[in-house]
Length: 115
Picture 1 (spheres, one colour):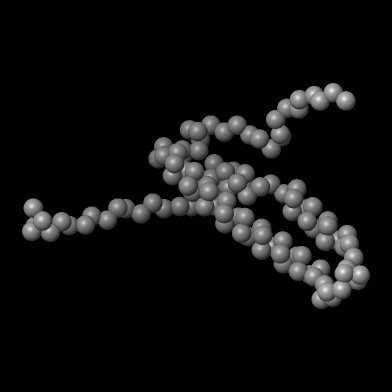
Picture 2 (cartoon, rainbow, N blue to C red):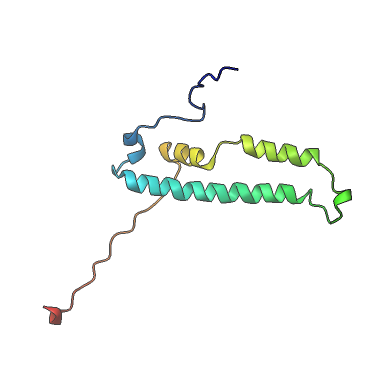
């Protein structure tokens, strides 16, 4: 069999850094906000998946009585096919659906006796 190179995954999207930089032009801040939002989405999806899989939890510890549950497999596959939290967070950020606020830096007075 001949291995033919395949193109990039269809889930890979090239992004323009200017679009990610947002209104203030700070790419690093944008990446930080997107990362935090992706973590929020990931935790939410994980909790949902665990709740749905808990419905199938067996109270029996005997290996002979454990069987393959098709519904559980379908739920797992459904979550695997969903877009990744990072992709969702990027889309939300670009569409302006993510609210974030940068706090103003505190001005700490320097005591006169230090001079």
